[in-house]
Every structure is written in C-alpha cells, then in structure tokens.
Amino acid sequence: MSAAEVSAADELLSGPRGRRLCLRVATSVNGQVWTAMRYAAKQPADDNLLSALVRVLRDIDPTSIATTDEKALLLPLAESVDAARYWQEPDEEDRLLTNPTIVEALRTIAQALASAPSATWWSSPVALTQQRHVTWLDEGYDVSLSLVDAAGKLERWKATTQLNERKARLRALSVPISGDWTSSPTWLLPTTTREAYPATAQWG
Image (cartoon, rainbow, N blue to C red; front, side, top):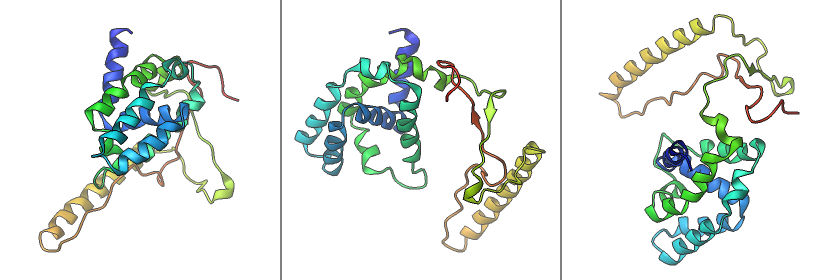
C-alpha cells in the first residue's frame, strides 16, 4: 500500500463513523459478521464472543472489498452516517468498536477500502459544477424551495439560530432545560448531490 492509503486506513479507524463503515462493509461481504457483532455488542466482557467476531473479521477477503462497485458501497456508508447519535452516548455497537482488538481486526478492511477504486471519490473536493437535484412530487415536497439567495438565507438562518442558542443558555441558568439540536436547514434549501463519480461514467 502507498503511504497515502495507509494514512487513509488509519483515518478510517480513528473515529466511530469510519469504524462502523468498515464493519458494515464486512457485513455486506459476510453475513456472519452481523451475528457475531450483535452477540459481542450485547456482552462486550465475554472474551469468547469478542474472539468469534475477530475471527470472522479476519476471514474477510480484502479483494472482495477492493472490487466492490460504488453503488454497493453507498449503503454501508449511509448506514454508518445514519447511526450517529451526537446528542447522546454512543450505542452498544459504537462502544464495541472502540475495543483495540476489534479495531485491529478491522484494519485489513480499512486498507481495502482505502485502496478501492470505487471509493477514491469519497475524499475528492465537492463537485460544485456537477450537482443535481431530484424532487419527489408525491411525497409532499415543497417545490417552492429555490437556490436563489441561498447564501442570504443561510446567513439569516445562522443569525437566528445563534440568537436562540444565546437565549437558551440564559434560560438554562434558572430553568433546567436542554437546548435545541441544530443541524443543516434542509427545509430551507433544496438538497443536491453530485451527478456521477470519477470511477465511472454516468449512472443509469
């Protein structure tokens, strides 16, 4: 592996989302990983269950990951992101994936992902000139959303959000309340995605 690929693999294993991604990719290759993971996550102090998970992870053939196409890798990627719970403690799976033995067992998978041609676009710059937007008219989507004055809309939203956060901190001094969870304002602007990925031509 190149130094860049080694660095990318280390980066994947350094955080909960990257480790979860590696586990999800392993599960997509070998269904036994899911069963072993669930047992080990329920009883993380059981060395036999941890060893069973390590064994099935080490049995993964890295070439089966390196040759996986973009579409097949998108589901594990989405599942890893969707499992994030920044507003509360990590779930049992993320806690399990902090175990150094499990992390090391994921290294071959991380290295395969780092060298997979179908995943090279993940670290590429945002494709500002290749964005596409799809509207599902039968799901009650607000078709009036527009990119016109997008920067202004975001600046006004940011100012209002920061003001509300300051007010919440002041209220918290006298009332035991929690704050709002702030994320990107998907209700304010259309959501876009890139039209194609460098490793392929247009998707059908």
